[in-house]
Length: 420
Ligand SMILES: Cc1ncc(COP(=O)(O)O)c(C=O)c1O
Image 1 (cartoon, protein in one colour):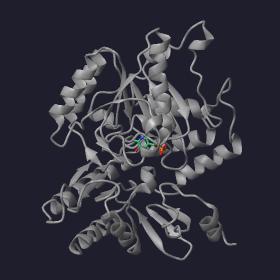
Image 2 (cartoon, rainbow, N blue to C red):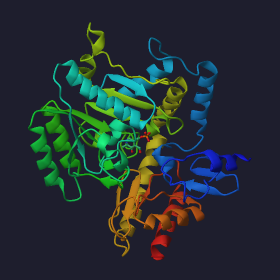
Image 3 (cartoon, protein in one colour):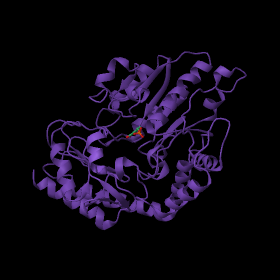
């Protein structure tokens, strides 16, 4: 059997109804913004392969640091042992979050959220107060593990598991005209005094359709929560590392007590999660009582190769060219969004940093809007990977994308709109 046949016969792919899905596109190599298939076709990766690829595929600097690391130390247990790359990535990330002094490694975005929730719950437990109420935001997506699902909006994704998810207090989305309701709902819950923490995607909810929040409203909520001792958890898994035009989306707001990082942390090279926190959280785990320790860890915690990839990516974030590229995308996106916003088929065009999105005037907003079934293959046939979220078309490109490549994506979106 060829490897492609093995895939079709045996591999169960994510977010895929295997009964009706066609064969997967076989990718053999990638470079910059492009994925190259074994049948000679190529695809412009306009979604940064699920929002992870920051500097482009197979970036030579990341490749070099990863291969050097591979020859030196590929892995070692992280309980009782440590290594220089973990220290380097920690110091460099913490320098961008000045109120945070500790970092806990895990494997991906969902685990970085699990760690944050467990830190928050155990913080209260260690202090002898059983606070377990968490506030989250309608429509949130924080990952697919049980804790992360619990704090995510209830949706078709979570439906089969709903009786197993822990209770969370959801407040309305702080944007799109429901700001006042969000603030009122937040205050009603926060004033009860038994809230452990609040978790949010800073500035933009990705998976629920690139929904941009009101900076003012979210800042008011975070600031008030901090004044009441409610632990604020910013899930920067999607928004971190330049995606919203600033290093962290929390730089548009107030920095949180805990931050969850992953995706572009390694520049999109490998899986790595990091949860950072303020000293008061960490200090609540320090005790002569061994049971106050944080009993959490994964076999690959702090993997040196993933840390080397993160360090290499951070080297690139230290370069002016990366930020110039981010600003250039931001500028081009805003021109495109302005040009398209009054199109008869466009409902709401928006952009923030390197994220551009628009909703097509077609039925309800939501992942299962049937227009997606037309959109996705239409773009692929024309060599562009866009993965619409229901009727929301969005562009989240790698920062190395050229002006010409961006124009190719914009032109195709325009062309598609004319077919409607
Ligand atoms: C905001 C946010 N948090 C968490 C996750 C989960 O990350 P992962 O898929 O790496 O588990 C995602 C994934 O898209 C995300 O967008």
